[in-house]
Length: 158
Image (cartoon, rainbow, N blue to C red; front, side, top):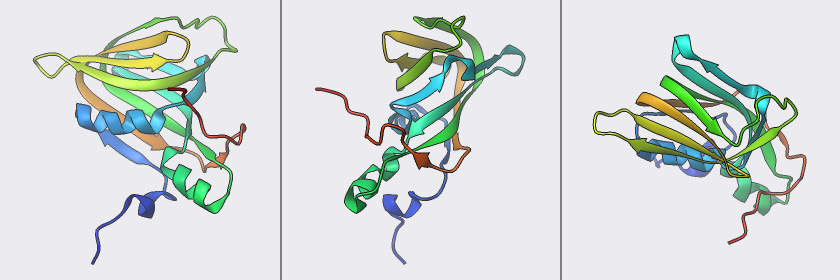
């Protein structure tokens, strides 16, 4: 019996849980270049939950798409943060309902007691900061993959 490989799971929808900073790095990589309308952010203080409905590029499928010469894909996913005590943002105009945001990275700054700050860095100098009492994050694909409208993989100049 052989160990599972990364390619074995590429066709299955993602459903990942995060409980530490190392796990969050994986989610950050998988959600890099995800786009979402400003209207698809939800902060529920009574439930201590902040959620985003994102259209994420399927980084886990990029190599297979290139190898097979087929178009790149995106998929709608829920990115949910639990145990959230507060939310702050900069450079995000919630009043402009037509704004599309692009997620660049998700990072965690821990404090000594396990609590800390989750920082969602957005393109264009925007950011969302979540004060959390513990790191508890879920990334779950909620639709079937679809062709990326641009037909291109995101690219970041070095």
